[in-house]
Image (cartoon, rainbow, N blue to C red):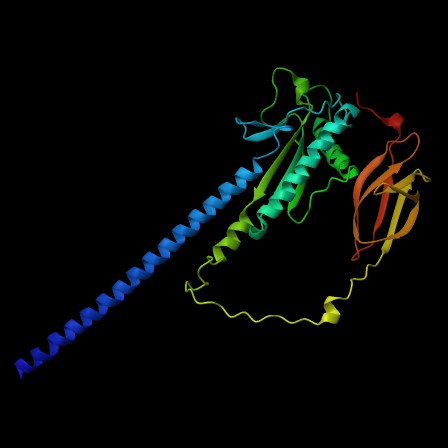
Length: 315
């Protein structure tokens, strides 16, 4: 009986060890495959990130120069803002128009080049001010950046908000990389384009490689075509206008929307839902230039108070 018991135990023990060995071997192969795929995906993402950064750094050398110490771009020709002023000098308008056009063309080319990666960008327009006796330099620096943005809108230079977010900022007498020798050189603007890679990284973590499905097999997936009604797909979208009210002091001020004179204040009319460049002019008062939005989901009422030229306290 004892000998029969030993004859049963050892074959069972060998079978058990063999089974455990096979399980461990399979787990090892799977772990190795997962680590290899993860490394490959990381290398692909890193390569794509470098490609995007190199593309963004390719700003036109005719208008931008790279400042390696602060990892940023400066205009090759600085906008010569007057002390205490945010208005763009006439002598710089042609150059600034060319700068905006080159930026728009670059962003459009990036959209085409990286269309499959859903990469978005941030365009930063930063205004600066000289450290002098003026008490509102931080507000002034912001107004300088804003004047550049509105200037581009007037010239029909717009950046697609679906891929490029525009940020207006003012660093006043702070910030890095200031000219410590000639303070008036700080009366300038800085323009930066920064890629937003967070959404790109999230989407690529879930995106399968070209030669595999989500589960790593080479099996082709069966995709059924979606059939839509021709009546629905060919029906044109109907555009509906919505009320727009613009109140202003003084009354009688000229209202210009997207370069077209639409009347005088107070204005009440109908416009299509969209973003519009608004200009308000009145003799003896500072003009207002801003962007307004006609929205179908809310009341579109705007009220402005023009500042008299005699109240201009800037030096």
